[in-house]
Length: 238
Length: 291
Image (cartoon, rainbow over the protein chains, first blue to last red):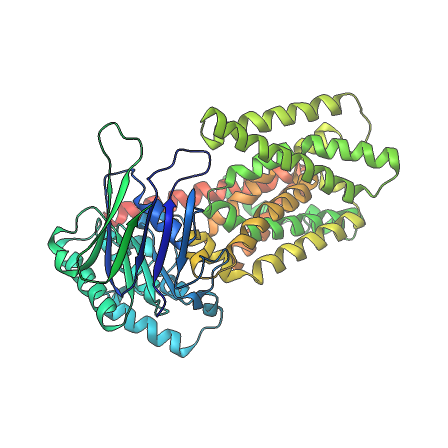
């Protein structure tokens, strides 16, 4: 089976600015929940965006499910993405139902019974049953995050990337999210990659930890990959 | 007293617009106004919801020297006027955009400050150029305030083509516009045509600004782009309600302009402005009632 994510000598950063990390290499081989951790501004979200192909790497290469990240994506690639909720345009009042429908990609142009059933299922699963017709922006921070996760998993992705989903959730919802991610990883074979600051209560759910370290007087971070379950991933220094 | 005057006004047997509707220049002016309001209504949700309301203003000023240059170029070499204007506007619009980005990046200033510096500089170039020539159709007054009464049936046909292109570009890609408008990165990952929509947006805005400039003027076109979505509160980037509001606003403004001999562009913007304030007042009253 092809590895979920492979990266070689990867350096992240924005064009015209300094690199954010020292080169590092590794491979995610198994479905599981993978944490990306590190101090503010070290490049965690940039790494996520680079793996997704939204950001061109400053150096090195990435493959997703055996191929280089596509320049133009399709829903059939099997990628799901949950950006930080403030990335959603807060002037555009789309209903929660229509918001989740976007998760079907261009197929949402043709409204089908199958899509409607899946949306109802997701609304119930993420405790948003009564909110289908409300504007997305009328939801609380936690409800927004749940709606964004529901949208990202609507098309059954193989790889799911989440950017700081725990920050806006209370303890109960954090547990619900992590339990659901664990279920997706271990019963549906989804590889879940999450950026966040605090995974301490959920260490048992994690397969591996990608950690950014900023040394004293160092302008760029070094990155380590620590496997918490045997053979789920490998890392090598470049 | 006020109500009596209003009653007398409404019970008049004929309005000026109705009386003049059989005249060709009235038909041309009305058709142009409705087509410009159709285009602005179509593009208004994207302009407002993507927080690009200032872009209409910026573009209207950026393209000014290009329009002037193209006019003289078309005269000198006997080229088709509208095609020359579009090319001239596109060239200065492109140069202006590059300059805005350059200033923003190099000087580390906010995008609106970079836009204002560039748009006023470009507009100044246009004013200097136009001050050297008078007595042509493209004079400063027309550019600033527009004048639908100077348009011809060929202009209406051109406006119709631009309106049709805008309609097709929005309606055919409706879900892509909505996904891009809501969350562009998610839309890109999910296979929506984000790149196409991102490239189309400035093209459509340039077309609409240019088309509208001759009807309502560069000072008013950004208001026509912003007000319909502010009034209608659309839940999609392709909103029939917003188009209907835009065209109704234009029609009322046009009728008022004919009735009281006001400039058409100003009358439409005035109607829109009053409605926006009224909407805010009604919402404010409702909020106070609830609390």
